[in-house]
Image 1: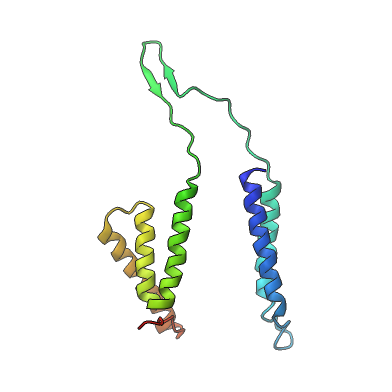
Image 2 (image 1 turned 90 degrees about the vertical axis):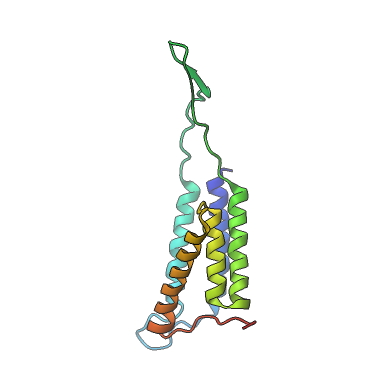
Length: 162
């Protein structure tokens, strides 16, 4: 199986699991309203449809293997860039930092946990200037905090330790 098919099957398994979890939601709470079951159903149906498309999508044809070096008529050697493979280890490290960020949010609160985890993720993807990543993370957290806590009056997690 190709990578796209494996990913489509994994996502489809999660969609089925989430669909099972939403079966306990009530159909509707008021007459002529879609109810709490409607929107998860729409999103899960769309995700399942896209997974099926991804599974049956044709793989692009492989091009003929080209040598890594070309020699010109005048003797000059030109190196061709190699095809890059997906950096699975880096993606797993980034996912681990994401999960650690969720744990941090639970223990130290939304603001501190998100600033730390977002700064580390930005550093991992190439923002080598540490203060810039820290300032960007702080600005993002302040915007989210302003939108949710102050504007929408939705409290964000405070944390268990503080």
